[in-house]
Length: 151
Image (cartoon, rainbow, N blue to C red; front, side, top):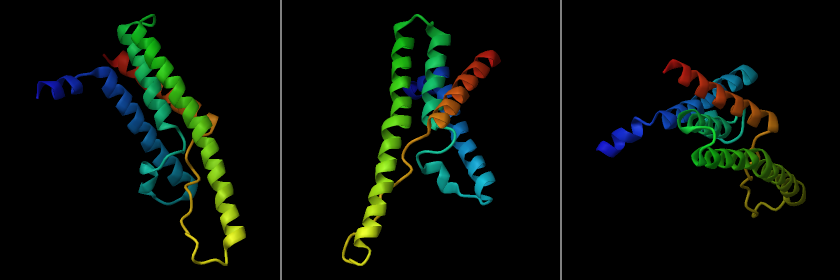
């Protein structure tokens, strides 16, 4: 049980998770403003504004830098991890979403009269725009700095 207590006492981890949850809550708020209806499923889907992945990893990296030091190997590791996650969120997953959109269009246009064909659509919103990643990153850094100032 002490291990669970140690995990819950890890300020860097808790701040990173809080940044992620705040980003998810902001997605719900932005979707509510944009669509004028409450859609709780926004909390469990990928993509959207801001990137919760980016908020999580940048808050983690900033917290490690603030706690252990900016020249530490741990900060370097967390920074490289953050860059990979953000690149994936904006690059690879965004490209996969575009491919899914094109494949869905092809299936609709070429095979719409063949009802025996599987009608499942591919998920099109997989990644983030670069702006969503930057916004999530700025949110993560801000949350980390605010938490540091509060201690």
